[in-house]
Image (cartoon, rainbow, N blue to C red; front, side, top):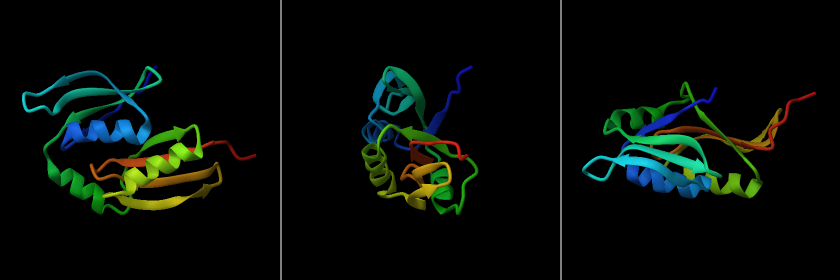
Length: 132
């Protein structure tokens, strides 16, 4: 079984460029609306689809996520290195809402919770392990 996730955001063309930079991804299969926004855009890491992005013009969703003290769902990204995590954190935090600053948890030495400027909630971490 594979899990598929689609991020519905306003300004999907900007979001695709932003996520490719933040997460070191490339644009895979995609289909655009006549206005250049994405009907569907698959973002790849090492040739594998990680998630998709689609246009959603409802600005209320983004505002609600940015105002939320703790949204009900997050997308988790496990990074290979601290440098990758720090790069993504800086990008996601700019114009977004930091729910929990970068720091340790019992199962990871470094992680953070951020709602980005598109209204998407990310749990980002590195070197996850299970406690004894």
